[in-house]
Length: 84
Image 1: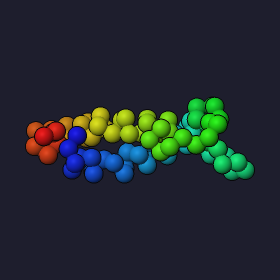
Image 2: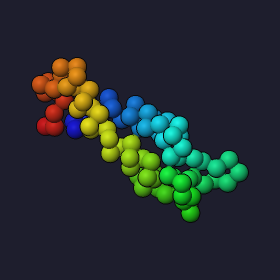
Image 3: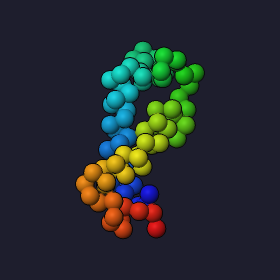
Image 4: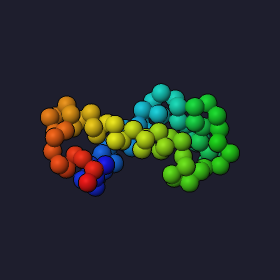
């Protein structure tokens, strides 16, 4: 994905997926302990940002969501929607 597409999708998809994960109970942050529960299992410690399973899911879907949006809006043929 080119830099323009990445900039457009980055903040929105990450925030949307994390909100979905909390709403569905997939992600929970303990209030008394500083730990996260992901899909029913407590993590022993907080992994680095790029290793957090909820971030891996969110970032992994960015490109697909951007492609769907671009196609729906009739922008799939525009140069800025493709890798250089």
